[in-house]
Amino acid sequence: MDKICLAVLLSSSLLLGSPYIAANEQEEPWFSLTLDNDIFVGSDGGYTNGIYASWFDVFEESERLSSPMPWYFWMQQKSMDTKQFNTLVEIHNVGQTMVTPSDISAVPPPQDDLPYAGFLFWQGSLIAIRPDYSDISTLMLGVVGPISGAELTQRLVHEITGSETPQGWDYQLKNEPIVNLSRARFWRLLHSDSHSMELDMVGGLEGALGNFDSHVEVSGFLRWGQQLESSYPTVALVGNREANPMAHSGGYFVYVGAGVGYVFNNLFIDGNYLRDSPGIELEHERNFLAVGAAFSGEEWGISINYVDFGSFSSDSGGQQRFGSFSFLWRL
View 1 (cartoon, rainbow, N blue to C red):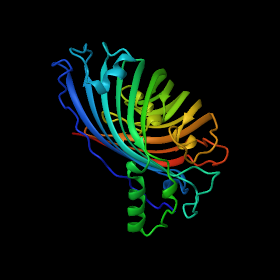
View 2 (cartoon, helix red, strand yellow; view 1 turned 60 degrees about the vertical axis):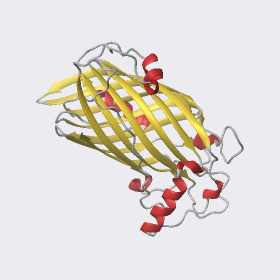
View 3 (cartoon, rainbow, N blue to C red; view 1 turned 135 degrees about the vertical axis):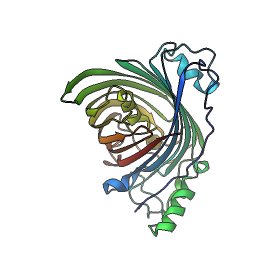
View 4 (cartoon, rainbow, N blue to C red; view 1 turned 45 degrees about the vertical axis):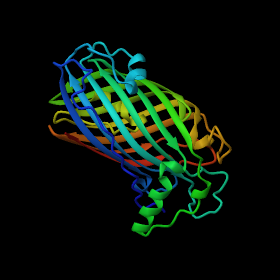
């Protein structure tokens, strides 16, 4: 059983004080760590765990960009309007995730369950925030297969913790490059204040295209707390796992969210596209349920969440449940 499987934490350089942003903008850099693990909800197998390190540059004020963005933000900028905004957020996210079948002792692994798969990636996201809606666009570049280092990570942590040794990594997905682009818009649909407490509803539409995952999805979130206006765009982070929904500026909230969608392809289910590899039949209809709470001070924030993506395959059961924790602080 995967007791606590910490993934390899990588670092990436972020251009603080970005030269391609107008000089009079106010930059507010943040850093976050997010840990997902299915052991938090008493299960194992499926989406086993992931760890994500993210750097956020938050630019307050509504200003036009004064010069072109770096190449790794070019596609995101072209897919959305970043010329005028109240707040612009640039995110660099580096992470490692792993997926295993339910029975990690079986050799070979069962053919009717998820294959072993490790995924190492970088994401670059832009979020353009306006009072009533926000746009988010993400480019993901990565690799699946032995080069991801997932086998080494899981074996090392299981040895340290005395957990059962996974036996099936020789059958994992083969090395393959990953390119994915996603685009979403989230609206703040309702908002009410009562005795210093706020209630709002946020709805979103999202689409993704690439050899890792292609899908369309509609979602909605109901939140209750304080300082909700400044943090409503963070619910967009539930799906792409950059971080959990975060409160801002000394605020807090609890939330419940749900979504439905259609998945065209998913590498963890289908297996390799360029070579033969293990895989199972994809269940195209997808839904998710998420609940959680977020708290923040002026220099920090924490978020605790439960997410259930259901099953991506009728063969693998309900294996996409996990608990998640994020810690955010100002650099």
